[in-house]
Length: 92
Image 1: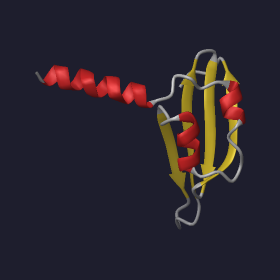
Image 2: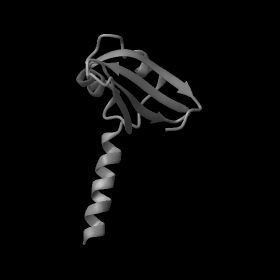
Image 3: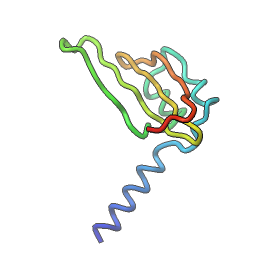
């Protein structure tokens, strides 16, 4: 029974990640957008790398969106998109 819930949870987590990330969609992500706006466009990222300065004045993250043929990466600084790119052939 527990395995069944684990499989359902895994399926839901995978479906939450957008399988339809394309270079064109990544191109719609613009500097100044909020993380919520990015997730509305691309869905939830498959993984997130986070860091911040010791004094916590600057926080940053890189959101990874795997896709066929590459990976979308969205760099967010202080809760605002700084840069977005599609890296052909990249794997998360």
